[in-house]
Length: 98
Image 1 (cartoon, rainbow, N blue to C red):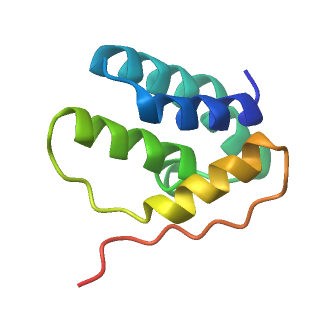
Image 2 (cartoon, rainbow, N blue to C red; image 1 turned 90 degrees about the vertical axis):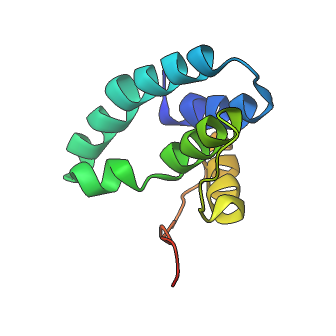
């Protein structure tokens, strides 16, 4: 799976209703796509943890749990859409603002 395919999967998962299926896809993408990409680019844990694909998956998992995950969903979604189109993305993860 490519980073473009992973971004598309993250976007498609936003309509999912099966938490275990979303979690299985998330695990595969983190291990098979994001970590190899991080290593290739010379990045580490923070890069993986704050990737827009991760943000979308965490948002969906929180929603399936009927919980609340505060994130910059719109920017993460825009970044994933750009990645899915194989465009260069400059995404700056925005944490919870106090």
